[in-house]
Image (cartoon, rainbow, N blue to C red; front, side, top):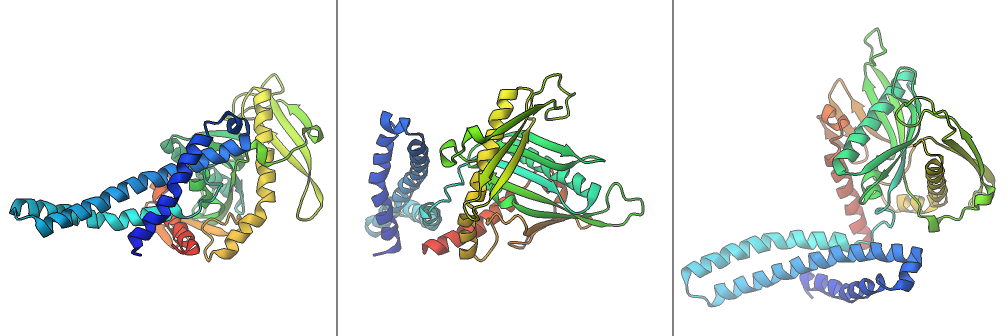
Length: 370
């Protein structure tokens, strides 16, 4: 069987599943089962993308066959010239469509469609590390704005001379985790700090964590075990201290399923001046934290299967260097370098993410033997 026919055979087998899922997601019983409904709607979207590619692929194959038929049987010179152009264009398009379909057929990471909780922590470098953490937050803020995503700060601690010692924020939108997951790890900066009087270059670092936001049905939390405190806060963005206690702090005893030990999780949220909303956001962060910890084995298994650290989520790995004197940013996982540091720190990070995505997808296709 030719490669193109083997691709069609795989797609034909998915067509009936697509029709089945499209019916299931309108079933009231399925809609009432939140966990099943969420999984099916994600599957429906993925299958829809595959069916769209199938339609374009079949049209391409038909155009090639028709052009070949005209060239074999037509006597009119003008018609044959048009057929040659049509054949050339579609034969150039066919391998692109085949690669697109192969990638769509690779089993997706079920986390990719999720929203995220992000954390940036200033590392070595004192005040300069805090300034760099602030630069990274600004970079992600501008990137999220360009994507039309919603970013909201849930908690932050400002540095003595600016920036952040640490900042936590949530990002929601389309396929957010699938895009931002590559940012987890240690980011290193080499530059002369604004606080440096001797003009010496310093090396500082900040750690970025990108956690897929857990759905309510994915984590079992006994809300009766949560201890709540409230406090006055300035809210996100540095507003004046509230006269009411809108900030919330929760403490939750969590038993680690891997060690059997119980540890206390502490989470604060000052995102809004509305205490109920802050409680809801704190609960979301708690679910995400627990989900992340409980799924570390899954993440480790992926890391062991793959040669690179593209998206293993290893937050101790040094992934990227921002060298200001040379005006470059280098990602050490794939050896990708851009010499537009100012544009990059200004939020123009899509080319880097695309390169990381290509590297990971190549590994995934190799795993799936496509």
